[in-house]
Image (cartoon, rainbow, N blue to C red):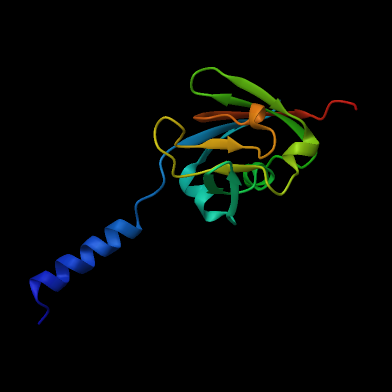
Length: 137
């Protein structure tokens, strides 16, 4: 017979592992819209980047878009909860170090676009990604 303390410890361990990351992003194109929850973003391959003294982890932006059915080669308008918007061109979207960071404190997240070496393109508290055909160079 299992001791109650072991059963409780096992239950706590399972519940701690099954907590899904908070947040979601509305991914929009001209023809459709899809909600991409943080739990789905957490299932994608994760990349770590460092900006200053902060370390961020999450999927590459291009992989998050692909998971929502958005093809490569698009410009993306990134929208924060406070209405702040930045447009990221297709070349930047395709970079290996541009990520949607997960698991952040409320002031930054729960989701944040991180663009190393271009802090003006980083957006905190991301709620939407609006994809459009890439502008001509």
